[in-house]
Picture 1 (cartoon, rainbow, N blue to C red):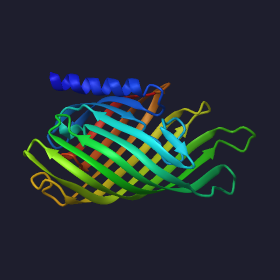
Picture 2 (cartoon, rainbow, N blue to C red):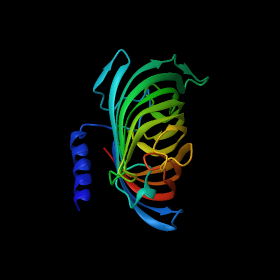
Picture 3 (spheres, rainbow, N blue to C red):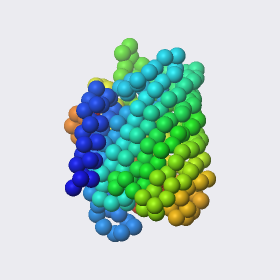
Picture 4 (cartoon, one colour):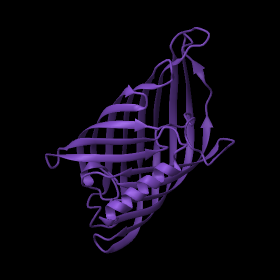
Length: 278
């Protein structure tokens, strides 16, 4: 009971403090867990985490000057067991420098594209919902991002019909693990690669009607509690499709496979959910 009250307090506090934020959402659903062959409930809050380098409109930036930025992000996932989510509580402060490339247009002048880059240092906290496995670390990340947007037609005031974004890069985490499960603490260090793909289909009101996403990471575990990190490698693939049914309300289907910190538990789920976007 105490745990549920604590998680509810964290979730509500995050919602209230982020009331002015854009591109945040709450997702409620049910997933089939292929590992245990049962249905699990899912309940998650995601804040400031849906945009890429050149899509900062609608995000809450603590600082943004000369392409230097400070951006808080958070995920709170309250699912039925660890198999419904790769982590339950994740807070990060993204501090970085963006390098925007030259834009170019397609031959029909309907699509505008650009290659962008960013380097970030992200203080982070990650734990499971029982607070048995806690990670405090800094993350160094290098990202290259290709983003393009296509207008409906060549009229004087056309609306943006679609936005495509693909990002890839490398990252390294260095910090400390506090493990109540094994009554052990140890240096935490990983290094790996990541990718992130997203397509948004918009209407004339500049609202998302369809959103397609695919993300993944794969990394080498340099140092961690040995009883947890029985394999030297870990990684996770996630994909989703969301369809708007009402303003700021979506239904979606998502798939997850792999393992990730803080528990390195394998996840293999197919989820049907409803999403409300702020």
